Image 1 (cartoon, rainbow, N blue to C red):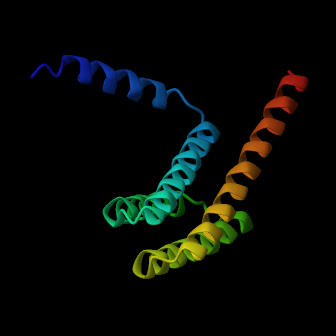
Image 2 (cartoon, one colour; image 1 turned 90 degrees about the vertical axis):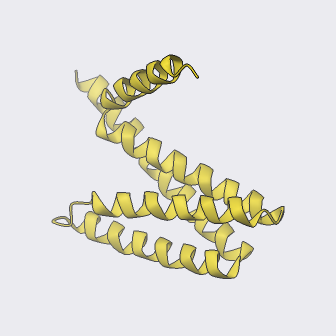
Length: 132
């Protein structure tokens, strides 16, 4: 098997990610989290429990990573930590009970949070462009 193509893809992907700003990386993580929650919801509706559990587990890993990278020195970091704790708690309940209603609720909240970060990033970029 020729792994050259895969290595080239992986190297290019790593270069792209390393060139991203912290804000872009945050949005990338949130996009992946929303995607995983949507996939989990679809898998649960199809009763594909293996895919459902894999996507919820990956969502929990992303939330743990987001929580681990917070700066709790500031109020917003502490507030986000509480929110991530809530998301983790709810997703563990969703995973154990296969609860569609709670999964949809968490997905909506995560999507709204992602959209808020995206809007803040766009405003910051617009202000930086106007000031520069």
